[in-house]
Amino acid sequence: MSFTEAALIDFLSQRARRRPEVEVGIGHDAAVVRSPSGDGLALKSDQTIEGVHFTRGEAPIEQIGRKALARVLSDLGAIGARPIAALCSAALPGDLDEGDAHALFDGLLALADELDVSLVGGDLARAPSSSAHAGAIALDVAALGFMEGRAPMRRDGARVGDALAVTGPLGGSREGHHLRFAPRVREGIALAASGLVHACIDLSDGLARDLRQIARASNVGARLELPALPRRELRGGPASVEQALHDGEDYELLFAAPPGALAELSKQPAFARMALVRVGAVVDASAGVTQVDARGAVTPLASGGFEHRFGA
Image (cartoon, rainbow, N blue to C red; front, side, top):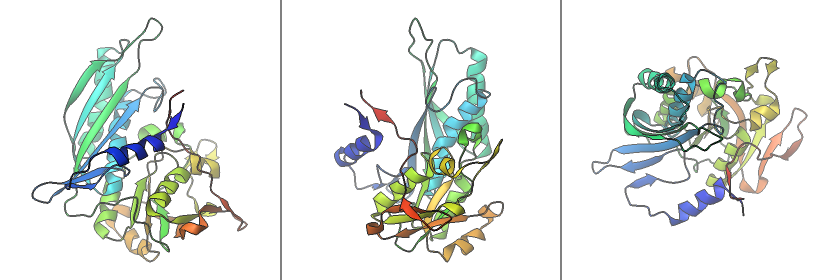
């Protein structure tokens, strides 16, 4: 019998023991635990697997290593943590030569250097293979970040009346953006430091699906204004509305804050070269999660996006 990623997360949320030091646990972009001195430590891990998150040969192999770290740092940014250190466990197939292995890690290390993150260890193994297949690259990166007195941005704090905003354009990520994106670490820290943001999530599974995660966690509804969606410029023109809603792997931040806060947030140095775009509003849970088109027609917002499924 098949089951979904969300169902398994719900099971783990109910079953996993939660110590008093755990401030933010399962179900958010990253976990936050408190040290004995009260410091907030953010923890996150993510897998980047050939055939799921990338196709070998679609881009230089350095970009695969870069993405493996960038995915984790995007989640730390979404909670407002400053990344400090990372671990990388890699399963490498038999057809990957030493030069490609070096290049893979060069991509990861280049981003680590750019964002002042130390790679401090991990594990190396040979990927399982068969007579028909040499195996697949699999990278599991875990990272530690410091909260430095900032309250972590969670998914469950959105309030009725909040504006919904994103940090950049959406859609068409498979044209290369999914390997080259800049994790919104600096921007996430600025949002958290402002104290104005009620909820936040990084857009990895598609705007429509990730918005539903905030609505569900916060027990609210949401209204998304389709004409307001910022859409990425692709080779054939701007991404479509459907792509902006459902493609995923945009790795922008979606956040909820009071409407008057957007102008103040836009003045932060972190947003000097980007525009925070209001894309909707938080409404009462009874209204559900809806979309409004250019004619003003209101319809339910399809979840779409990407979700892992397991089982037969």
